[in-house]
Length: 211
Image 1 (tube, rainbow, N blue to C red):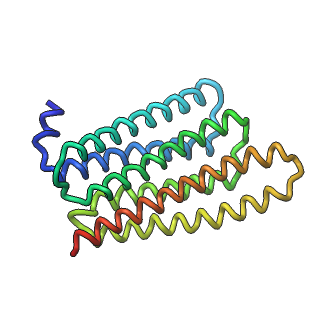
Image 2 (cartoon, rainbow, N blue to C red):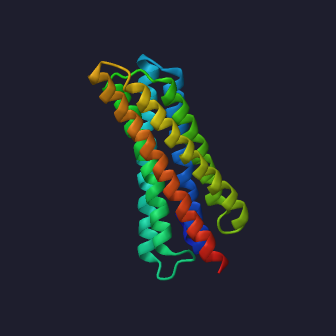
Image 3 (cartoon, helix red, strand yellow):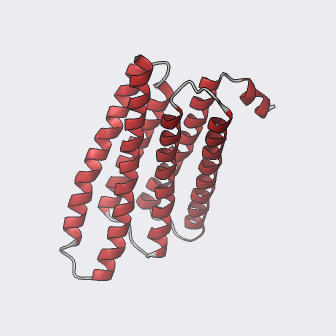
């Protein structure tokens, strides 16, 4: 029945629906990462959060595969097919970086720093803004632009935090610790870059739709 409903959906609605599903899963993953760095769970609670992150990553991959298959099966798309593909890829990258970050914090045995907490909170704001921008990009383009601008502002804040976080690291003497923490910072910065890319693609979709 679910598959039948998907088939009967107009093509435009179907693509937006899939992108919204992908954004929802990604938002949940980043929010999970935020709880992880803020609450610092241990034992079974920590294992459960790591497992949930892996589940979300797989869900995101499954939705992306649907989008790619839909692009292959559709001769004419309501939105530029390259924009759809690139938007899905950028959102998928955000989820992958969230997954990598939580796993590397555990693997490297790194204690979340105040900068990590602040950076992940900023990522949460960016992903929520992206989710809203995707929701409105076809039917309410001006409202979508407001949200994509908010997402891009989050990336600017992230870059400032990334520089300040690295500057503080260089005051330390334990090189092993520096490299481990810096790797986590790098993942978070890259995650914000992908959010910025996604916002740019949404902007492209909105502009093309207004021509």
